[in-house]
Image 1: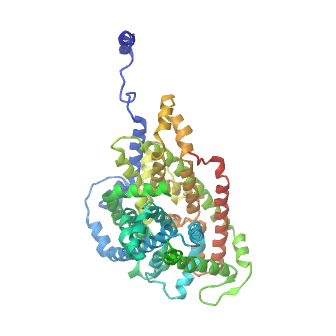
Image 2: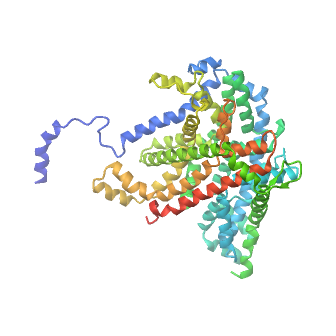
Image 3: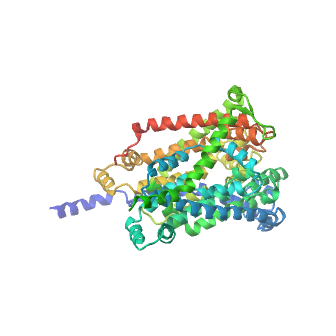
Length: 296
Length: 292
């Protein structure tokens, strides 16, 4: 009898050590969670360090890890007003905005052609797109600079923005997957009703792909905000510097002077916007990235 | 739909045709031409044959730069991807609080390298830097990290920082791959009494090899072209530490512009990257499973 066996073995079970925190049966692995928790402390540590240092009184407090001793918000004022970080943030925002418009318009446009039309050469063209994806930038930087130099576009925002209006291979690839997921019958129905292809693209397909377009915008924002190499080679005058470039110069300038708290305040200003935006939209963003990863 | 109607496709893809013509083919051809000339952006280019390539190949600095970037790339990607595999599996357990962890691990990937190096520069600083203080508690160090004179120590310190910054990105991709695995396989393994470690190595890992392969190919070719992190971390430390792209930067945007030599080095680097990518593609069949 199963019941009897269970009852008989009951006293024996009592002798088994009572499960403690680590041996208790769970539907997850407690060691795994502890490892993750420890790891996340390491991940967070530099941010806490940066934030507390940016409010510190002097470099000594930073190095001896006397955290959150002072609340010198004046360090931020020094960075924004005296070091004119406002100006650099403004430049970065202008470049970012232009790039976002370019990226959204061009990629949603180009990918539509690849996804919805079976024109002769579609396959060959798409193969060309994939090839450009694997072309290393190393070999392109020098001639691009010479080209922009020849047309006199150095020290303007043109080299940093114009490329986005002609599409990017990776984004086209993922945008095409996204359009392919939208039923083709929609297109045919709209065409029979006499809609122009441009109208179908702008009014039917782009709105339906807005989830992916949103992810695209965020990625562009992050890319422009964090880019150093482009501004470093194309921007020469101080008034046109971007935030990232200004921070790179800051590092050399303030490390020598030893004003670590101001330097850290600058770093926090550089890191904060993307993190704050991400925290607000992280659900959509992670979902968008993940679906792109699976489809790609 | 009619044949003529399909030609709207050309209209839609036309911006990318321009992209290929203006931003891909023209620069490639120009660069190939420059690689065989002497050109300083002021005087007109002069044909010098293979001289640029021989100068590049003969310089010790070139091979040091290649050694540095190769060691960096392989160290970074092997640590990055193996750590990301473990994290992806751990983060995929079904508990509510894990979504917070997912966010935390991803946050460093959002931050600009310029700001990251400012912070890590202070953590690494040999003059009472925070990491040395912490390691001192457990009796280790002191280390010089990126301020060291030894190339391997600089690279190791750089790799640690880059893993911190980049592991969240690879984890996100691998997590998507782990989530896409069918539950049946895992349940079957559970019923057979497989341990978590065994399940990880015998089931999960083989099934996510396509994603690992994708991350490896893009990661290695990206890391071989690294520039920002070495430029930022070693500027001002007094030790010149070059990777290939910072050597190109110095030739092109340093005190004087040597377009020819910079192009020649760019092509040399391109050839190596192409070989690595091809080799990875060739050995793909040996370990990547697409039949899941």
